[in-house]
Length: 205
Image (tube, rainbow, N blue to C red; front, side, top):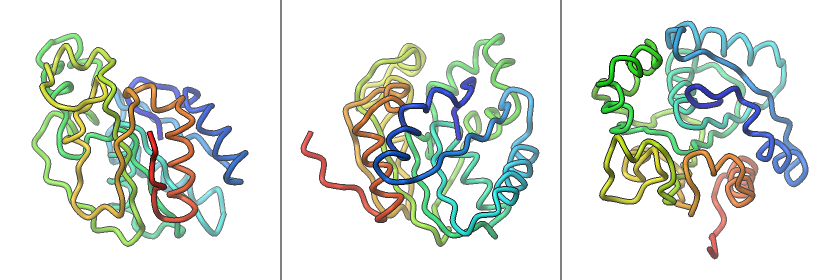
């Protein structure tokens, strides 16, 4: 699941690593956060998963895509078994989105899904049966830092503290930026490890 304003093809490196090293097949699901409601997106996604007709499905969500997965499992819990990995997902909040939303043109581009999930206070907790692994980045490269003015570890768009979610199985912080994690071999390795084994490997840095 891609993030806001992204098409999905930015995950080609991740797709290659998951296929070559872990034998996993990646399917992109596209949504339009600037024009679709969360209800419409999750309903389409539920149908997309059903159409795959496979016994096991893992989910990987980057940024807003992780929150789409959170709502999918909340509203359509009867999914095939599998695990979930969040990549730079603002589980607790997104100061960058909230402050960017104060600018009229950007607020209009964000649309209803972002307004619902990122611009309003949220209290989230992972209560789903499937295991969740969270990967955060601490390389501060990205336009989000100009809005949020972070004074803590961040990936340039999302602070590490904003990725924290009660109830997760495992979490790791890697030296990558918000977009850089999508082309990082280290992130791909950790993602595949969690999806296949249910835990991240000790990262030597």
